[in-house]
Image (tube, rainbow, N blue to C red; front, side):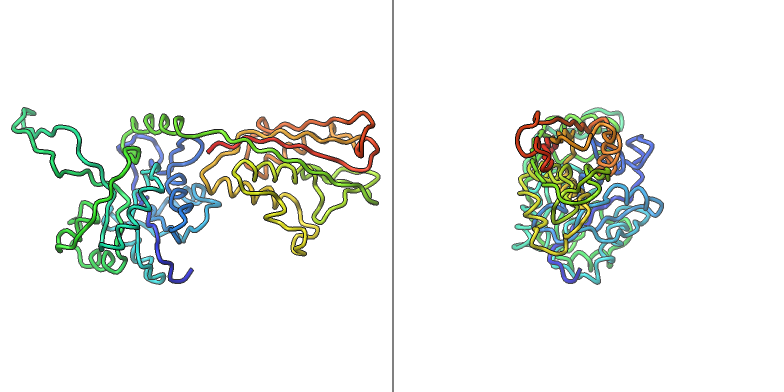
Amino acid sequence: MSNPEIIAVIVAGGKGSRARTGLPKQYMPLGDAPVLRRTATAFSTHPRIDAVLCVIGDEDGELYENSVRGLSKMLDPAIGGENRQASVRNGLRALTGHSPQMVLIHDGARPFISHETITGVIEALHQADGAIAALPVSDTLKRANRAMGIEETVPREGLWRAQTPQGFRYEVIHNLHEDAEPGTATDDAALLEARGIHVAIVPDLPTNIKLTYKEDFDVAEKLIAGTRRTHIGQGFDVHAFEDGDAVTLGGVEIPHTQKLKGHSDADVALHALTDALLGAIGEGDIGTHFPPSDEKWRGAASHLFVEHAAKLISDRGGEIGNIDLTLIAEAPKVGPHRAAMREKIAGMLGLDEARISIKATTTEGLGFTGRKEGIACQAAVTVIL
């Protein structure tokens, strides 16, 4: 990638010991996905973010790859330093070959960052060299002495809680990090403040919490439960028979006296499933993504279509809930091959076979399937977003 305008740097190199989770907190599961995947997805799916770079621990390569596999816009990760300031500096150095105009720096353990806040920070950078997401302080503040007694009430007017992302002109923040003494910045905006450079405040949402302690994960799970919705998609496909000796259904080749006619491998089950997955996220149909006029897809294996639809869902932070397929045909018999079909589809999508149902029925000799002229399939899926 050359000269992207805006790159997000996600700082995810810490061990997260305060969270007492065993794994570094950024790799802990949250709902159906690791924390870091949720964070990276928020940026990779934002239309104005051109690329995403994560800064990770030097021993976390496998955890990182498992967390972000399949996400778009991801650059090769940078390796973190001995503290956050050093990690950010390493991330900025890794971007020198890309020379972005702007960079957004975000904590990997803030998975609930909204597109609204990301957009606000980007817009603020059109009038300032730096901008941070922040929340106004609403509680009464007390200063305590060493004996934990109250010394005074601190006025809260004009006080804000600094959050992330913090956005900057790339050259400005890169140069300041290179010049900064180690351990002198509690956050990146402090480097601009020390030079008298204006930093804009962008009001954030209260849900943009940072997962620091074990108890924060309980709050995060409740946030997920309250915001995710189940979307339903359905698909239907038909293929006629032609001369041949086998049909492909659900990724399984089944010996038969004929084969199914189609531009690809004519797997009617996977075509219906692809349409259902695309329908659940409003992404059109299989012909939109894989037009039959394109010779590239002649004879293609239909698992490619299913995996493409699944990636679109994953890129949006979604999860496939369950799949229900109904094959409509007089022949061949589906029953003996049902288990193999479930196994194939589960493998394509990384799902437990228990979430995949495959049924078969006939039309009692009526219609084109009853006349053994072809096979139809109806698919229904749920997608959680």
